[in-house]
Image (cartoon, rainbow, N blue to C red):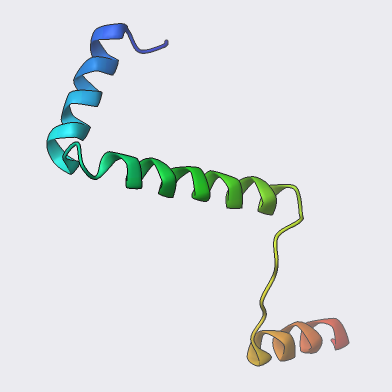
Amino acid sequence: MSPSLWQLLIVLALVILFFGKNRLPALGNSMREFMRQLKSEKDGRGDIDLTEQTRKNLKDREDS
């Protein structure tokens, strides 16, 4: 069941009231960057930064 036009307008009005019209562009940019990172992680192109403890744990699991 998809949302109707009135439901979308109500959600948009609540977002504008909550964040204010001046902060909406920054919120949109943040969401766009988040979606870009999420897509790159899903595609397997994301950078993985493992700490030394995590590397040690992974090595221990492989050894056992």
